[in-house]
Length: 165
Image (cartoon, rainbow, N blue to C red; front, side, top):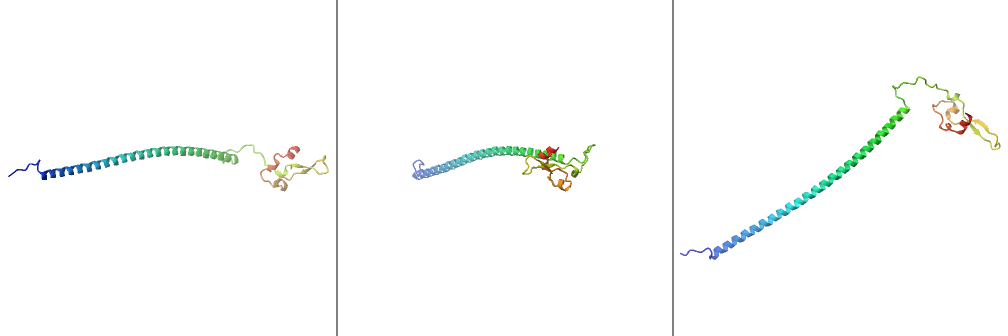
């Protein structure tokens, strides 16, 4: 019997070539898969960088918005405090505090109807040189004799009241 030489036997050589082809195909598929994995990892890294960059930009925007909101809040609180202070001062001017001491020398209330009524100048069309004085009916309290607690605003600086005093 003859022993077969593996180097020269065509069946064995065909089997070896077939196995080598399978190994090459397997290696090529592994290489392709590794390249795909590397591409995915690279893409993920790019996306992660992009996400990180966007997050940093959002943080910057949020900080700027927070600073602006704090600035607006501070301004509005200052305006509110100023308005409250003005209202408090106005309240103090209008109505004294209940616990405050009353002045010793209170001014006496006078009857407004008993005061001398201001007079208005009446010029008649025919007499340019002669000036007549007539009673001035400026406010309701002065004409009816009722006390209102304040003088008519029209009487305060009128020339007719300054002439007679």
